[in-house]
Image (cartoon, rainbow, N blue to C red; front, side, top):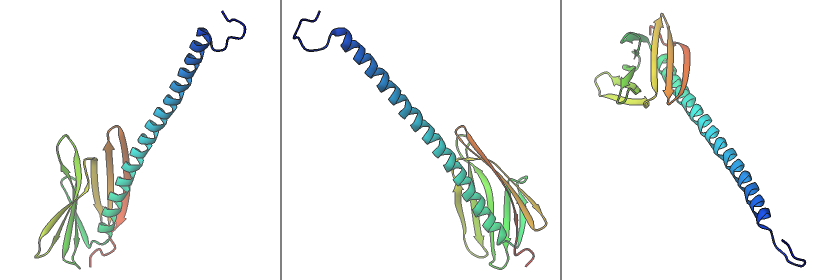
Length: 162
């Protein structure tokens, strides 16, 4: 009951204002939460594709510089020879803990040491090579949580037979 000249809100007006404010705050929070979740998912996809692209570029560059190639391990590895430089390089999948696989590059210079370099950590699901004459086909599948990407490329050895 309002009396003349009394200022302020009634209890019902206050409850309605609080209820309306709560709906607005929950809606805004939901928009921010799902927006952030979507952003993280897209960023994870971009990172996975970036990693696959980097690995394919690295393998392609090495294969192009090779003078010959040999498949290893039922097509899951490849050894690239560069007789001009006296170097061989080997790309292969190296199993690590928790069913994860690393893409590894092993480099050896004739008469010198061998070095190992991990190209991709814990994301390689499958890697297949196929050599036909001067061309090498590469099929790379990466997985990160529930995301997967699949890259296929064919590369020609420029220095083949030199």
